[in-house]
Amino acid sequence: MAKIRLATVWLDGCSGCHMSFLDMDERLIEIASKVEVVCSPYVDTKEFPENVDLAIVEGAVSSEEDLEKLLKIRKNSKMVLALGDCGVTGNVSAMRNLVGVEASLKCAYDELSDNNKGVRPSRETPKQLERVSAQHERVFIDCFLPGCPPPADAIYNILSSLIEGKEYDIFNHTRFGK
Amino acid sequence: MIDANVQRARTKTLTINDQAFSARSDQTILQVARENNIDIPTLCAIEGLSDIGACRLCLVEIAGQRELKPACTTRIKDGMVVSTDTERLRKHRKTILSFLFAERNHICSVCVSNAHCELQKMGAKVGLTHVEVPYLYPKLQVDASHRRFINDPNRCILCLRCVRVCDEIEGAHILDVFARGLEARIIAEMGRPWGESENCTECGKCVQVCPTGALNEKGLSVAEQHKRRGFLPYLTTMKRGR
Image: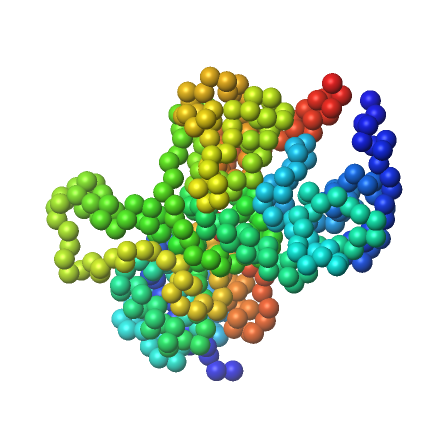
């Protein structure tokens, strides 16, 4: 059986979902025998490739760069899995929506910063969108795995089921805010 | 003491999910279903308080009726044919839960009730993988003025359990509802800060019946925020016997 072209992407999140992915421990070896990781923070790919079978996307859509990435992921992937509460509900990332972009930048760079107080990055930080959104508010998402983060068991369950084309029940392992 | 209503009640026969049951005419569909171990999802209904059909999760289909009816406030009728678990109902339950999540700021991972929240559990129970309507992100003020309790409207689902327990069991009725629809809020004593309430007895029953983290106790960790409801059936029985 040909290996599945797998990509994992990290948008606006804490990377806890990717850490949870690694928590699969020895089961990663089993997964690795069935997939080819073509793009991921683990392998430090810079550009999202074409013809991806399954894209696992962590994080909410907060910046123009996030949105650009997500649109490309959708275009180049047969199946997209939203991983974790930020991607599924907006979660902590979307708490910015309660105060707005300017107030959050002011808090981060003007009020709480220890170094370079009041200096805001002009190049390295992408432009923030007015509203942080869950992934499915921007593109079609095929499957959802909530949890903050989703436990390794939940990731293993859904991933192995998707690879083998079997049915899965995520709520045995996770829910919002797990 | 014999309840006068029980004396007047007659036996009626109805069908729930293709099974025939006999029950008292003064019972609701939800009561009959629960007595017979048929699960109907609910959030606002709680044993010991009046039923008001606020959350609409317990909607059921009744043969011959186009609209869905809340099982908690619909009395049984002779020959009634009820379905509690159809494709249409499952779809409606997901939509209702989506509204509840989207109307306020339920960020489960940073909530004091994470892991022991009825709304969160209900999401998993009805298979809500994601919220199907756009989030509103309302700006809501937390009222932490009370010495012992916090009212966080970000987590409120307007089930009104707190209002009912304060009125029907404690007899204080200091909690009530302000405004309507999306603007509705739980307030204390005509909208003054809860801590300035002159009539709050600080009994904490409202906090214990709250299904989410909307009403919570100060000074307790997330793991300690378990709601204790053992008092409710006991006090209800005591009040009835008065």
